[in-house]
Image 1 (cartoon, one colour):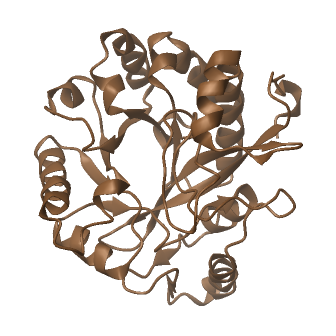
Image 2 (cartoon, one colour):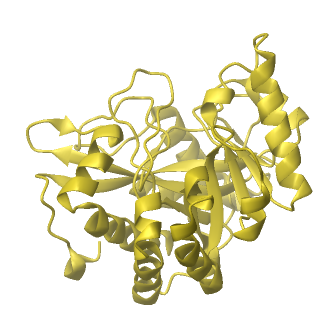
Length: 321
């Protein structure tokens, strides 16, 4: 932790980070980790992102929280393989105020984290918001990657994506839940967004993948990557570093839930066993209280992820997770 920069928040309690893996669907390789912010209140326990983010905007905590998430996640990700991308979310309001590029620049300068290894996730609304264009352009000029989160919920044209140098589109998990049923509209949206993303030179990531059937379907649509409980639940920062910091980057099975594929390299066997054990145990920030199982993605600069959900992914709140 960057103890010399600990912020003061109006809300009682403290934040901490968890990370949700992103998996390459063609190889099973670990591609990235999305930072998810959690807030532990001294009397209320974990506060859901849907409550935390609006409250943080109102009481002025959103700026300090975003800066803290960026500093903490960039510092922690310095121990990862350089091939693994760090994803952090932000709100459209922060982009319109020009706060995100400044916070990112400060975090990169102070941690020496490579700008190309950082992805800032924004919403579809931010891409079409004129007042956000300047901050988005500044982020691109730094070499930071841009990703559109929850795609498919409100889009009419991908042209704004092209104008803002978007490299990745993340398809909203609400469309994934019905892929195995006869809900043809879900399949149509998912396949169309993937096709449009590829036609513009963008990668397509599918959120909230929970079953082998869903993995098979999105692979048949040529989705590039996925994240969700099928592969792993959110990990503590320590466990994320264990997974992402090894010499041999883990490869996940695309047919068996929460299972690593053996690398075939003897030197990596012990580490692979340790990573497999933490996946099976679903180790989550011991001693901090346990967030509900559905907390996958969402938040503030990292999206603030919902903490009060059932054992079924996944709700989302715009902003730092």
